[in-house]
Amino acid sequence: MAGREPRRRKLRQVIGVDLGGTKLLGGVVDEHLEVHGRVHREVRGLSQDEIVETTVEAVTELREHVPDTAAVGFGIPCLIDQQTGVAVMAVNLDIQDLPFRDIMTERLGLPVFIDNDANVTTLVEQRFGAAKDATDVVGLTIGTGIGGGLVLDGRLYRGHWGGGAELGHMVVDEDGPPCQGHCPNRGCLEAVASGTAIGHEGMVAGEEEPDSDLGRHLAAGEPITGELVTTLALGGDEVSRMVLGHIGRLLGVGLSNISNIFNPEVIVIGGGAMGAGDLLLEPAREELRARGLRPNRDQVRVVAAKFGPDAGMLGAAVMALDELGQ
Ligand SMILES: [Zn+2]
Image (cartoon, rainbow, N blue to C red; front, side, top):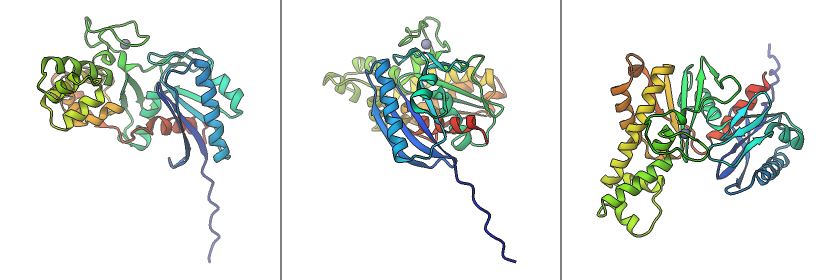
């Protein structure tokens, strides 16, 4: 007997917003991670009030485009007090003690969930990406700074009040260079192995090796960024490759700490610096194997993230869907 087709439940949709130091990327995302509409705004140099206004306006535009949304999730590069919903401080963004969740709830009239950007990118990689099906995952996002996230025993671990997991600010060199932005420390992983650090190291190497591609770009007055060093390295410049090898080994020092402490199954590495791929990851893996404790170091997989620039937006949406519950 032919039965009636079971009525399919409509997929829930939420808005995911990645609010970074230079840009805002938002999208309407469903439970299968399909994106139905996007917005993009420049936020570099904006004041805190302007960031709030730009964010409200961008989310409003998305809702006009796709009206049926159940919540908004935000991934922001801040330490967030999950009890109060306050974005307490950011190393690389001018946000301080901002009651972000309350403001957005009032202005948007929807349930609002906020989390650290690296937490949500780790979550989406564990749920749908390079660490799919692993229960113990550490994520690092290497760009201007280094963000860190932990999924332990299948759940995001945020620490006591929400300030975890700032893995980029583990010290790998006690007397190392001062860290950047609002971090008072020195020799943090972020200070020696971020995209910014690749640029600094590239500048030093270009001065020492004026006949290299790197040296010629420096002599021509071009700013030496992590992106340029990576492009030249991929094009075959040996000096640029050496810079990435050096930074990769420093990254590996951090990975050995992570492997020893957390015993993750997978460490996922994303962010703009991953344009360098194995030029950065292979020396990092070697250093991890040389420094880490057995058997953790031999079992952990160090892999490139699956999601590129959309990772924060998708992760913020997954976080919001999780928080909404079934
Ligand atoms: Zn630091």
